[in-house]
Length: 102
Image (cartoon, rainbow, N blue to C red; front, side, top):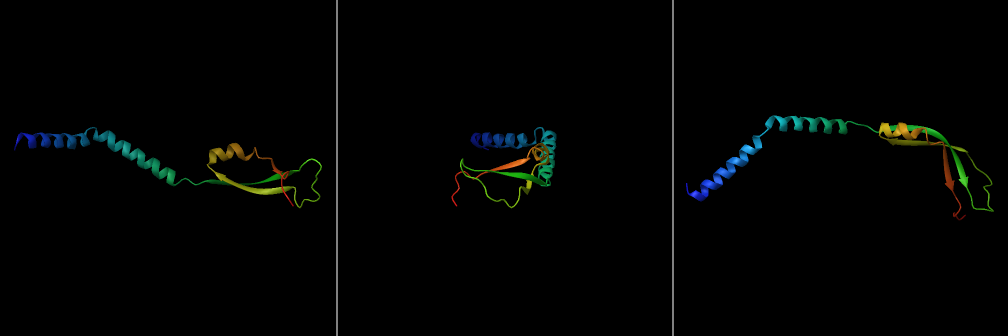
């Protein structure tokens, strides 16, 4: 072997050995990554249906003559911890019709 090839061979051998350094740590981290990946794939969004009051806001000098319903049913979905936080906070939906043309 020429000295030039010998240097490249040792470099290649060191790279190959670096792959196997701390192999147990690498295997554990690969296993943890796999478990996290599976748990995220299996997670479903939480869906909640809630009936809330609807409030129309009109321009000054205008009024709403008739309204078919004063409550609407809404369906919201998302991650369960966030849904628990916001589900009960939605009590009234305000609809601003100030700049709407008829």
